[in-house]
Image (tube, rainbow, N blue to C red; front, side, top):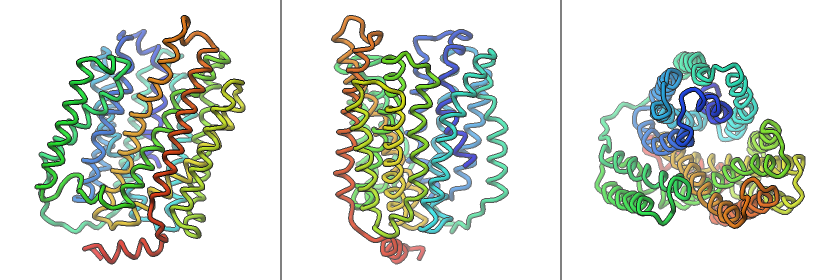
Length: 460
């Protein structure tokens, strides 16, 4: 939980200090890269870390992630210009790419099937607390004129998290000679970097139909094709073909993709909606959105009682139905803006997502043994990251098309309401498509699935 807190707080603490950072070191035009570079580095490194953790263990990868995050935090704290700060945020992102999936994978390793939902709820609660603590701390540091503190505060947290991990977590690894897939890892990293970069920056840094956009997507697609060919020949592929050929793993990855899109769609546009339509303060708008991250751990921690009785698919189906209801309520009430209505809708969506994300992830983890669980967990979280990136791109295109059709654009409350309503409707459609992926999951009981995984594993 403490290691997860490093990533969770960092995801929210930087935004409130941006004005102070820009005032001190300049670079207003490029400050969005503070977030894009971090998210990009985090997303593309997850599959590589996940595969390595199945080869050499979770502990060294987690410690590596904490170390990189610590190094990146120190460097960010002494950055002297915006380009340098962006470069150091990449180092932070590379650390975060190891920490988050390893925390979830370790939980899958050391807790029983009945316990995992409650533990995943604990990990999700870290994000709920951070959604309040992060912006508050960022605002305090910014108001005191010491924005570098938002990065330096990570130093003691990293040291304590690393010490606790070394002291308390012990794993037995079956030592064996491995052949690391350097070619596959390199091709995957570069191709994903280009594809995610194109999704994040398309329509913002450059037009979708521009030469650079076409070049980025084409290059990414070609390199990804080369990666697929390379994986067929690799002795130990970084992303094994069975990850997408098994029905359960493929459908749960699609569910994670939808969860990421829904989550980022609301995270990106609920505050904008409330601030633009009602002139609500950023703090109040942030608290309304925090209702989503409060609902998530509540339902996630209780989902174990459901999936042990009615199965993973039925539990996820209940969750996605609740998610559709919450997002539809947000879309239908957007024409009558209200902080309470928005917060209530976000809370409902959070309850639904907790019943979708946690059972489907645990279902994927339960279907495999230790030596495959890292790749499975990493693939699930990576799919969520891709869903977030593409979701933001699609929702941004929808909103921008409405803003572009009015003279005052984002400054007109009526236009903000119209654009937000369109985005919330798109989020509802995305949730409905996620329901299709849930329906496609095989209906296997948790106990039978766990037994099958043990029998089919070379470690059994």
